[in-house]
Length: 168
Image 1 (cartoon, rainbow, N blue to C red):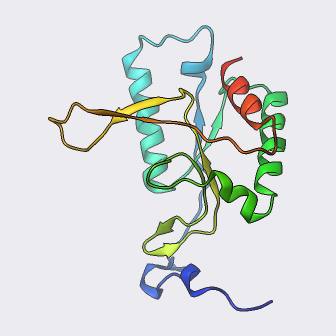
Image 2: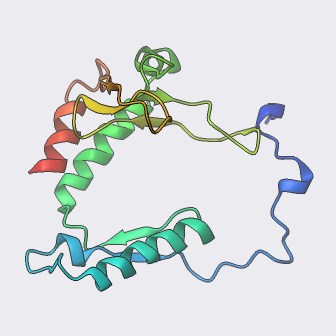
């Protein structure tokens, strides 16, 4: 099978402890309060409960499953198919839209957690393109910068599928 790159090996003190690791089920987040046509977004208590539920899932698990989000199955299949086509390409093709200090959105495959490289690839994008964001973290700095999406040549319909699926 070969050697594992040391960049992917978690230090012993950061590895899960099998005697205390216990899975009781992936958190299931119901978004019907915000996705249903009959939802009452004025209900601050219900919305606050949803926010707390998401926060707890992120804190305790790091991820969660979403139901009642309103995205039809056919659209989810199209998104998955186009995503598989993009991520199935050779590395040199994906890196044509790699994010960097100037282009903060796009493909990336070298994220780290606790100084260890993650076993994942990502493709970041913003629904609003371009997106204006503060140029710095300083509260008095009112300068804005714009982030632009990068789109790969293949699959040539990835942009349409992702953006169309989010809006229609």
